[in-house]
Length: 102
Image: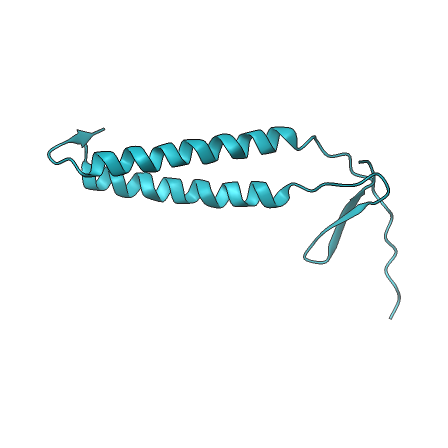
């Protein structure tokens, strides 16, 4: 079997501060959404956007759960690269590039 020839591609990613700030804001907003939805779900006879409070609460909790999954991926995607190391990015065995800059 012949070895595969792979040419090195250097990636230059964006700063992670924007992703970190976005993730923290989403966490705060989702916690506020859980608190607000829990407070509203104790009331009866209220309709929000034409939905009963039970349907609205179900939709909100589903949306908040989806936000938590997205935030988990955001936090997991942040990588710190020290000055003397590099990261190789692959997906399902396919090489995408190497990050060498700190």
